[in-house]
Length: 275
Length: 296
Image (tube, rainbow over all chains, first blue to last red; front, side, top):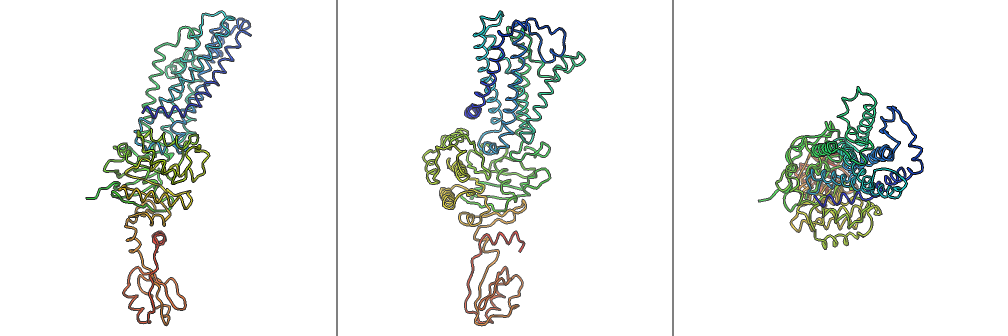
């Protein structure tokens, strides 16, 4: 399976470099510009506006608050686009392109195919975030002398890696949709609907206390973007929940793929049973 | 005792409500080249995909080398080389990288000298990216992938599709060589002449059902004979209006007949008109095939 994993990583090489550089640019832009308007932001009073809170913007008066509200808050949203494209393209996309047929006819168990692809996606996301983290730490080091903050370059680097469990869940939702639904377009659409539903559900739940009950069901509940996460990191329990969800999604994807007819594009209820 | 390399029993596939294949029972023996013949949509590719566990039957079972295609498919597929009918490759790879990748996924370090020999025979430049290849060259890549590990069973879905006639002959030579090595080939095609050329037995599939399985020469013989009878005096038009006999052509000296039965009756009638000559005109598999489909 290691050979298969290596091949899958090779296939993702361009995506890792491209998305790594793209999101690094975003991080460099937002963090690098801080010294030029940090003083003005210090006067920015959001008061009790629930709207800002709903968008994940909790504090713009400090460097940590600004970075948490922009880079920590939005970079995983951007990377989720890659996660959805990569996750839905992994099985459903390759099936649409006709590449999966030859692979499943090789003497490789289907569970290994799914697992290798899931692991490759996990590693790809981690590598992208490593690039982003290095870029964020680098730009922070460049401006550190102009900013008063307890945040360190290591914190900036780790804050990128802390995004991994969240984007991993998004990728695995997409992978599962690709293993279950008949084509990539449907899988990507379903994953996007789930992702957007989670994001806006979380935003609404942040605005209205009456929606507190649904919070445990939303993946964004387990990703904190308060300023303190920059120095203290994400809660271990939240990371564990997201990693656990990813593992369950991989198992479900394996189960769905075991039952799948390749190249047919059939809906689940049209498929034959596995002996 | 003969060993069945492929065996299916009651194999049935539906795509939703659409028919795939119905109750297909077939056996292919070790060392045999089995031609699987039928028009587009008849069920050839579906049958092959079930054998390779790409799709699952709603009923029936299939075995390769005596191993269940679903439960023990991984073990069985270690001995199989496959060329799909619709070949889609990783376009950004060079051909030799693609071969290495497939071998890595198979967990084998194949006989590279054999692989290179096939590439040379097919005149395939493996140093170019696959996206730069013509359709024919991509098909050659598929042929190499199927043959390169010298598998015990080759499952080839229209292997000569998109190839020029010379390369088609090379592919057919590879099939013959595989047979000479004692390997088995399951060969689907709608090009009847090539099936006739390399296959020992042929199965004809129509509307998802296997309607005939015979040795190629037997199938040709058993269907009908075509005789051209030359006469000193041409018999009247209704002279050969016998059961199982169809007059298909007539000129000034001869009558051409297709005879499914009643050969004795034909000969008895013919001698009464002073026969000068009798020619047997070969019946091609294509004509047998068309007879099946035309309901002659």
